Amino acid sequence: MNVRDTEHMIAELGKHQSYETTQNMEDADLIVINTCSVREKPVAKLFSELGNYNKKKKDGAKIGVTGCTASHLGGDIIKRAPYVDFVVGARNISKISQAVEKKGTVEIDINNDETTYEFADFRQSSYRCSVNISLGCDKSCTFCIVPATRGDEISIPTEIIIKEIEKSVKNGAKEVFLLGQNVNNYGKNFSDKRDKSTFTKLLQDISKIDGLERIRFTSPHPLHMDDEFLQEFASNPKICKQIHVPLQAGNDKVLKEMRRGYTKKWFLNRCEKIRNMVPNVRISTDIIVAFPGETDEEFRDTIDVVEKVKFESIFNFKYSPRPHTPAENMPNQIEDKVATKRLQEVIDLHKSHQDEHMEKYLGTTMKVMFEDLKPNGEIFGFSDNYCQVFVTGSEELLGKIVDVKITKANRTSLKGEVVS
Ligand code: 5AD
Ligand code: SF4
Image 1 (tube, helix red, strand yellow):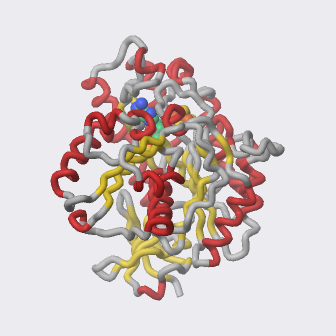
Image 2 (cartoon, rainbow, N blue to C red):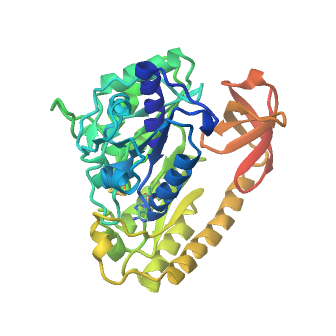
């Protein structure tokens, strides 16, 4: 979502202020740092980066801080780093062009409604468009700062989403990436109080767009993976067979304390169903180790789920206490030494699964959409199920979806030959 927010800011600043992007920091008249605050590390990094930019920037260049850290620290950022010109929170991106104009601007209303704001158009990829379908989050996972930085969940009207995708398809996009904190909760709440809708219905509407060949989305919530949604995921040929199913933890008591709303049994059942219904599906997940109070024995349930589901990809995190979250004040915060050990165990187990999955693609044929040419003459793209695939080829392949026979596999990518 931050990547898309950055695209929106580039577009707005280009349209209303005629800014252009530069690869060279010393040339910049404006430096915008778009921040994440989901874990502590990026927040700490912000102030050292700010100091660094302030030292190196061109005379008179402005500096702005945007995104989730802007939402939760607000004006304190300017107190701590007075050379910062403006602060714009993650739900206030539409105000970026005005903020640049007025030194000291702080716009951090977390319930600002941008669902019908028509952002100026810009996207980094020629063949893929990322499109927000909802803002904010209506869950209250006890470890997570997002509801405090991105506000209440609100869905973008279907016709606005469709119009944006149609426009991108006209300009060459073949694939859409639908974005939201909780995509499969889509349609519960619109700002004009219209009738509710569902994510399944949205997927059906989007797949009718002529010229659009692939649909991806992130992140769904395991709780809302009802059978109707899984059926649509499995049977709609435009929906790519890649799905993120964020586990967080495997133990029921820990899940309850995290307020995730599902049990280990439900999670395993959903993944089993996905694997049974969708051949070749790739399942990714997020795992937090060492949530406050998690015992060694409870952690075994996380390992058990990893062993059973054999995720194709895992984003692993050590629990990081965040301000404005209930878990921050929970007793029994876990020592870093224990967290490191648990994290390593997940990583090691996952590596063996990655190797197993990648090897089984050898000799198979995958449909790959090529999107980037490397200086070494290799061209790469993604298969329908989101494997990174490299072939030797020319720019004629860019933007095309072609059959590739896989000849080499390593842990994170594949190599192959175009089948003519
Ligand atoms: N500590 C560690 N990881 C976190 N995440 C969210 N909040 C925290 C936290 N306090 C992780 C979750 C989420 C992903 C985007 O970031 O796994 O799914
Ligand atoms: Fe955070 Fe939970 Fe919402 Fe995801 S579902 S953004 S983890 S509160």
